[in-house]
Image (cartoon, rainbow, N blue to C red; front, side, top):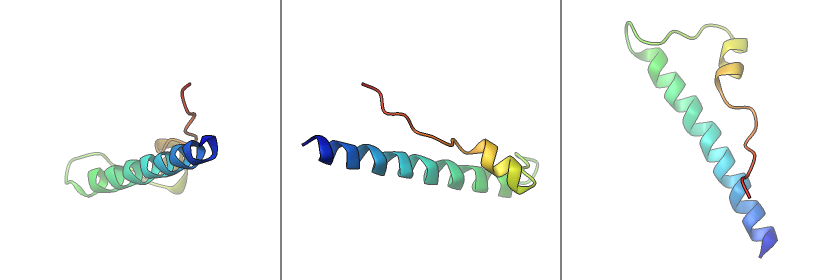
Length: 54
């Protein structure tokens, strides 16, 4: 059961990273919206770790 929950937490963390990246990408496409330039900005704008809460 604990192993299953670990997989769920990892899966949800991945979904969170992907959805954040997509949101930043869409915001970057909007004229006069958010502008993100360079790989470093994209990396720092996306959360790097997802720590599960207990």
